[in-house]
Image (cartoon, rainbow, N blue to C red; front, side):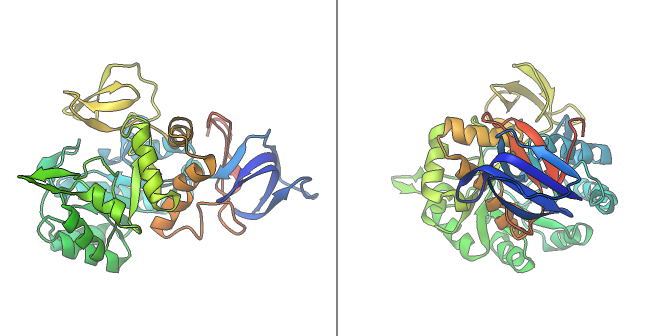
Length: 399
């Protein structure tokens, strides 16, 4: 298949090119430029109408969407989440499993295994880059919406069981201060799995030690992360301060405009820069669903975990903390540019190239570059998605 896109504002890693065109051939980007597009025979020609043409977004932390959650344990739920996030411009995704009991993990793995051979042949879902384990080796010392009753010390026999069932685990969030936490980071690093520090009460000193033990990434910075506190008369830092000190530590940033106020987004961006920040949705099952403000919903099928949808976010029943976002990826770009004042080129980089680099797939996706996969988006000035391309194929509105 040969596709031509023309009359677009192309977002490259370092600039925006006006009056741009791009040719995709057999699923990859073949060439691009400015001015008059090349002549030839094309299967599809798309007028970009001066919309922005960008790489598809890479979301490395997603729990649910469209009324589904990956932990529901059904193929319908998995596909429902994937299709919902595609509509927000996510063309590469890392399904995330929250902290769960042992048997529930195994059940979820069975569903992914049954789907995995099919997923590569479905043309209406994002590319699945593996899965993200957000637990269970976390700490209950820091508030969050996870079920802290499932938290436990690192059990390497259990870890090996999980990897046998799910060899596609790509990222694992853990608390380094738990028993076995430091050595777990070394184990993940040797396996080529991203070791991410999160849902943790680690001190600044422990975080710096963790960096040397393979934890080169922080899960949703500020959320469920330890920070400055006093220990008696003495001041002690936590994960946040250590992350700012460690130049090479990568971080996630929930950029729905609610989890972190604009000033926090600006601070993280000022210190870490676009090369070390991944924009994530941390989306729950109500992402992409039109829900009236203040409505009660549930984050689980058993209706034991009530949440309120207010101010564009999910809150736990007593409104004491967030219960995950309800954002799709294009909202992250909108928040970064319109609320935090971050330039569009950097915002797109944080939503595409940086997370791709963290996962080790930036040679395939994450930026507009010749020979990379032609997962592309056209969006307008308000970051509303106008057209999605998967492997160079434009999706129709009902896909």
